[in-house]
Image: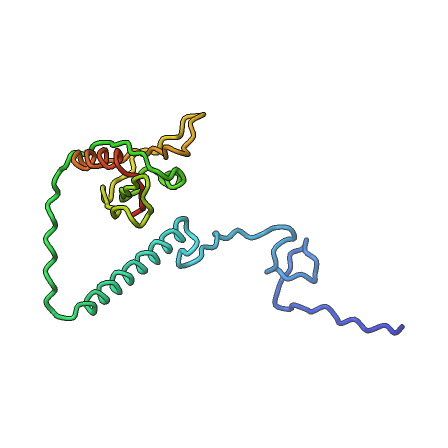
Length: 194
């Protein structure tokens, strides 16, 4: 092993050392274990302030909405063939017709199981007199159009749906309720979803 010669300690001729300090440490170096006091660091721009990310997201959403509105406005202008837009059709006046709840027995109970309150249905009467085949009888007719289903009562326990069908409650005008009652007396009723 060869020993390397050590480099001599740097000499600081221009620094005067106090009596209690070692000769190798300059005076500009603070004492061991002390940290100089300095003000806290602040990041410029304020990107890390509370609420900054929320404001950034709001700006992005606002910009997206503005772009969407501009695109919709531009597409609306291209959509019309003539510069003068066609006048809007006058809305039909709503005639307040009082509705009644009409219980109707539908021939096919499995069809009634598909219904739920709020559905719109057409009620069809298909006369099926005894002794005639399906092609010989009179044609089926629509008794109620776009009737709203109010309720679909559950079958009472022990009562089968096999021969009588299933019950459904429809909201219809009073005149249509009378037609439904007359049709159910002479025909088998069916429903179609609108």
